[in-house]
Length: 181
Image (cartoon, rainbow, N blue to C red; front, side):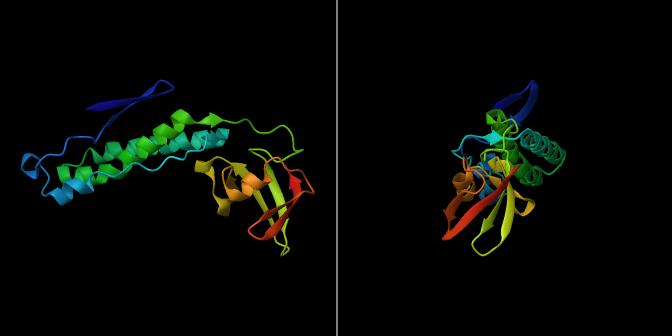
């Protein structure tokens, strides 16, 4: 069976692995264990809306392309068992990123810094004196070590809609918003 994914006119072919279970005697795998190694369950997809920034959408499209490239490279492997093992992760990732690109809702950069919104960078001070700065972005582009957090994260949900000078309580601490950009 074949699945076709059409993303902005870009067609990708991805075989599905929903083949009926059959005896190992009728397959080319060395064992049932080898056959099971070639199927990976889908990556979980969040129940939140798939909000992304413009750069977040580009990153998703790049990851989809990289998964496709890795899958194509795996298809060149002669040994069928090794080919399936090497293709399993790129195939799973391609299904995930295709779904995320397909459902992405690009949110324009905010035009106002009056209140915290998706795409804003917010700086806040914790009770212990630490000052932290994060940009609020989509789930797939969030990386707290790089200064971005998901709009669905507990801290971001508390900050959204607040203004400079307001305080919110998070994990037993108060966070005072000191700037929005």
